Length: 117
Length: 110
Image (cartoon, rainbow over all chains, first blue to last red):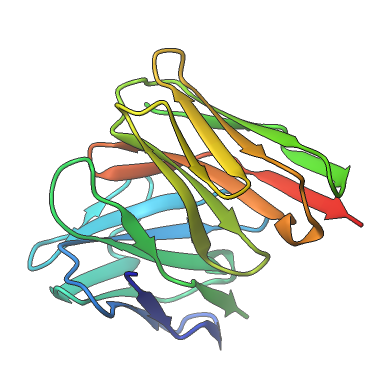
C-alpha cells in the first residue's frame, strides 16, 4: 500500500525559532499534499493544500507567512513554522493524494509533534 | 460550509459488545466518506472508504453505511475487543478536501 512518511516525528524548540517538517510519499507520486493540525483531544483541521510546482492554498485563518509550504517535487512537501511560539505547539499531520477528481484516497503520514518552549 | 459531527463523543463498553458510531454531515454533495482510527499520539489508519454511489462497505468486524441524502454514516463494530480502543474519525470529501468530524473516543475494557 501507499506509504507516507514524516520527519521528524517529534521536535522541541525554543520560542522564536523556525521548524521544518518534511512529508514524503515513498512509493507513489503525490500531485497533491495536505497539511493538518490537531490540538489535544480535537479533530484534524486542514491548514493548507499544496500542488507540486504551485503555491499552496491556505484555509481561512491560517497565516501563510507563518506556515510556509513548499511542494518542490511529486514526492516531497515541507511545512516550515516560522518564529514558532508556544501556541503553535500541536500535532501536525500531512497526507498525500494522487490523481485528480473526487475519488482519490489520501494517505496519511504518522504525524509530527511540535512543542515550543 | 461543510460541518461533520460525530456522536457519541466518548464511549466506554465491556468487550464483546456490538457498537454503533454515528457521523453526520451538513452538505450532502460529497464524493466519498472515510472512517479512520487514531491511536493516542499516532497518525491515522484508514478503515473504510465509501464512495458516494455506494451504500456500505465491510471489512472484517467493521461495517460502514452511508445515507448521503440524509447526511449520515454509521460505523458498526461487531464483538468489540480491548484492541479496538482508539479514537474513530469520519471524514467527508468535498472536491479536493477532507473535512473531519469531531471524533468518538472508544474504550473497550476486558
